[in-house]
Image 1 (cartoon, rainbow, N blue to C red):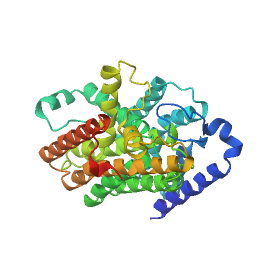
Image 2 (image 1 turned 120 degrees about the horizontal axis):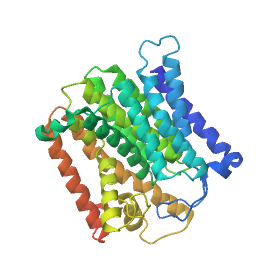
Image 3 (image 1 turned 120 degrees about the vertical axis):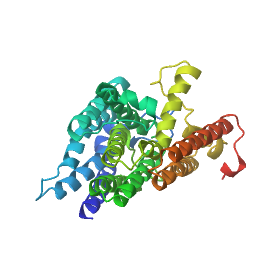
Length: 359
């Protein structure tokens, strides 16, 4: 409990300090791009909220190991997260780091987790496919790809106040709950410590967006969740690999659909930003249909966007924690989730939004 409180209050106070001192550092920490297709804010805001979350995690782990270094899993996980976190912060400050460079550093962190924590995907509970995972090189490559993809997914969905951070909290609560139910204090502790650190930031990010998560925060959260998702499956044979998939279904699906949309529908690079993410469409076609430009209306529409996706994300996490041991049921719920997402996206993008989605 002490480590959870430490993570929360350290993140909370650090976020306040970043906000209160922004005049001193906004020249390099501020997000000054107000016109990009994925930008939905009206003034310069610090985009280094990830620093506060990182500090929260560091202080919590330091306190936990003040007198006991027997189990250093949390320290090793923090070490593995550093490459992705640092390259993300570098992008937040310089705005000049390429997508490829960020992905390479994130993949390196995933490889470190594989080497030092044994975080490795060994199958999907699908017989023919699982034969391929018997080859270590296939298993390791797929693990690095999956971890890197989920870390980047949290950066992709980080488009509105509170969206990426609360989706991360929801997924972490799912991981922590199953860890508690299976009497796994490591998974429980690491999940809720990160959730506490995110919450300390979230209070200042939502609803008014006084500070942004930034690439550093998004990569840190995504990689942390990805590694914990792999570890919990590897540590407990009764958990289906599809628990990890369903617990992270929304960011995974948003990323895969973004790749498809950009590569095959738009014919652009998969790293090229666009304004047709599901969260962007909800903002433009449901909550800001009149295209208002006043700051109060803009902030209100921005803040009301995220809860739509929080609910959507919960619809995959809830069945994941109830049926974590049944691959057929989890796969069934995953395809129901995919079908629901595609149906809703198509309705919104073709201006046929269901009435119940309108405020």
